[in-house]
Image (cartoon, rainbow, N blue to C red):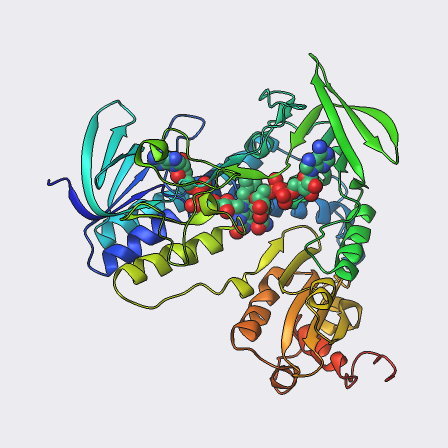
Length: 478
Ligand code: FAD
Ligand code: NAD
């Protein structure tokens, strides 16, 4: 087979593999090189998301939620579940099987769309050439008109708390615990910290999350974030804000963490410690220096609005270019780039990127928070719809949480929707659509929602913005 391609994508995660598929659909001869190896040395497409991120974490979140709810919520429904047992090995095997099914699916999609999937390492050589080295050491040089860097990111390894793979672990290590630690420390109350902290807390680990910042989830509307923090704390997660970790030392049996809070130094000992302080771009051994691809001061590949790097014919997408490090943002960039290469005008709307934290209740948001809207100079109006007043949530015994709508007081346009509550990850899509279509509160108020559904609470929150809700108490008009 000829080694000449129209498009070679380096990286087969959520940014790279959809880009390759869409490029092939648009008639480009396309190859996708991916280096991922799982713990058992099996290669798998899908990158961090499918192998060690979104999917395995959601599988464990689902299992641990079921375990928790059977123990603590079944009784109120009149269901006795006194002797609920836990088989961590089986839970982990299910998680791995879910990932395997999905990563196997990518191979099928490549075959169906005529993408050449190459499993091994890719390195840019310059002059439109990419070296591919397979896992068994065979090398070949591919030529391509368009080379796309989609090599993703890796966890930040703190010097003060270096990963040792046993006591001090990154998110991948935390997804693979073979037993429930008695005590678990987590550095960072970001998305990974609260999701993986939740998993092991629900399964029985006494979990302490140490967060340097004074506010919980500062990117979320603080009224909503504070409500979320209350619910998570009630579940037993010990989230300590304003607690900056200074050092962590692993011993044979445990790990001792020193942190500073309120001007005082404190220590605490845990069986395991998860370090979840963010991720950084991954460009190791990619040849960016050889080819002269410009990186910014934090190591992200610099691109223009069309994902072009400074080197003609070389593009970059996904986590490696920064912005929100989210799978769906990478997918959209991959598809947009493939379509742009084919002459289409596809663009990604970075003002409507949805975010979700898959805790219990879930936290989900799109667009501006009240704080962000005010900082941008908007005169705003808001509505806060509590799930406690929602019939479906009541029937589900899931009345915790609320939906907040932030709108421009002058134009009535919805600027942001921030939520905490049951399955709000699914409700968020309507809010994203509202932002995408520049909908006003009036547009949403006139949109019928089926009864009884959780989605009615979004409708209710919109009605509350203008004090015309029927099922909740409206704020008195000033
Ligand atoms: P990656 O998924 O990192 O893929 C890059 C691929 O490139 C990898 O397979 C890598 O092996 C390969 N590669 C690197 N260098 C080379 C090379 N030189 N040659 C060949 N291949 C190479 N996001 C969400 O939207 N929702 C979630 O619920 C969510 N949960 C997460 C949970 C965890 C625990 C973590 C860690 C992340 C989570 N994320 C989530 C973030 C999400 O995983 C990333 O944003 C997403 O995977 C980024 O996609 P990407 O394609 O840019 O990079
Ligand atoms: P993050 O940036 O979300 O959070 C890291 C936290 O660590 C910050 O709040 C920071 O203040 C804190 N921190 C840093 N140093 C500290 C110290 N010395 N002591 C105490 N706290 C400290 O990063 P993350 O949680 O590692 O997640 C990485 C990326 O993965 C995120 O960009 C996220 O978007 C993505 N992700 C997304 C999902 C999802 O969409 N559900 C799930 C997991 C991960």
